[in-house]
Image (cartoon, rainbow, N blue to C red; front, top):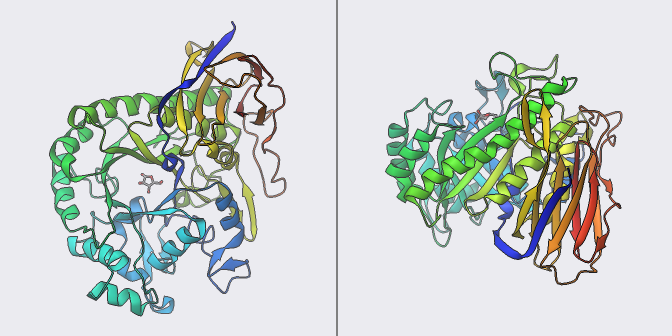
Length: 495
Ligand code: AHR
């Protein structure tokens, strides 16, 4: 069939919050330690302990916001252990992730430095599960109070004169699970209590995020919105793309069979239904859409790489992951009226990472390249798109073969991102750019694709997969004809 797409260049659907391209870095495995923090004395070139190669790579993709310190770690984290002279900081056991020693060398000051260096907003997740109201309240005072107070004085003694600007603050993480195994009614009450003491000091205005549902726990969203909606600015949602079963075997990151490719795509597309249904509940209590849906954990979750610590969640990253990322961005953008932030799990060396490291070596994953290609959508205006495409069939199942999203940036450039999900068949598309003022505009493109389903970058061959110029697309009047190879992500810019 002829696949047709109409991009309505004159029908604007709202702003794509750049925070949709947000990140998450937890004290888990080799994400923070080794992946980001190597310490000032390391032989690996670093800026005040933060490795330069990773820093430079992450700067390139314009990370808008970074969530820290967890995840499950957040509800075991006691921030006071992570400030003051490093040699005096408490050593603890990271009981949730691998039972390894956490020396607390990367704490509040180091995280804020990282955000400064990246030019991104910090998003801090506080401890409800095993922490006190006072501890949470004092953390905010420590970071944001300008003037004399016990915590502000302590911050100054620890070398930071001025308060930091902090907007995003999460009150707990997965409180239905690792964050305390609570029922929604109980957490809703705790949320109301904890957030009361999470104060706005001076002109620092916090955006408070309540711990939201796991996957399709719609009752959680219902109860939180009903009981605590007035006290929150954002409500989170967590959903991971797992081809197999979480406990019995998730599936391998590489060397997987064809059906796992298909299932992975199908499960990634499920994010649309989750956002729609959680969003419908939110609409009931918040029709003005004041409260943002914050998808602060998403991405692929496979079996760990053989021979690695099962508690470290280290997995390879292939062209399949790139497609999963692109599919998610299309969904998030389509829901940009409600989805105000998302945070892929996780930035370095854990789950669907941007960057993998081994000693002093570093590589960029296919997922990284999608973030790089898609950064043009950040803060752009979503355009209405009509998509009429064929099906990608596998056994008795079928999904749309192609997904599309389009935006217009502040300079008037139109960006169209396209994914061909099919692992075997190319897709020919006829794209009508209706409403485009300049019908002879210039078209440039970039493509990320591969010949095998599990193609990936290795430390020996770090550039096996990377974006290259896509020169196939030419505009004639309002018409663009494009052929997308199997397993491809394409970004077109019309200017
Ligand atoms: O990202 C890994 C873990 O997944 C997080 O710590 C937790 O919140 C989720 O279950």
